[in-house]
Length: 160
Image 1: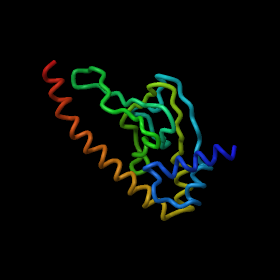
Image 2: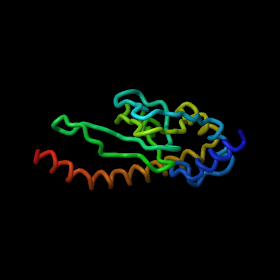
Image 3: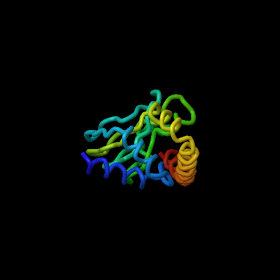
Image 4: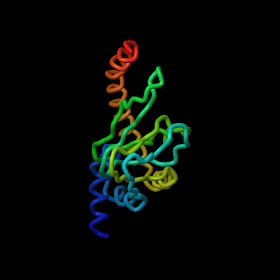
């Protein structure tokens, strides 16, 4: 059990979501987190459902499928780096999920409920600014990557 806690601790410290947090903050997040295992092709979150948790990829690979203008299934995003996170938008803007996320093989995720995070922020108020800054950095990077993809997706759908 101690080895698992140490592994989760190191994992959270390395995640872009929790960079710059202190030891006590990381230890508390470890206690609040839950490991979830998924089979290949299993849906983790569904577009339009209410977001109630943030997920971090511990092991495996995830797909974020969507439909193009012609109704064809495309997968513009893959999540395959350990520590990558998703499901963070409802933390800042409660509402329905903006995408479906599925596993592309055996996958292990670390889940933190939004309720647990709100409790965490009550105990570690300064951590909230750090986490939101980290989220903003990752969202800006995703936006840049999407801006590069949009012209190629648009040209693919217009030539079909």
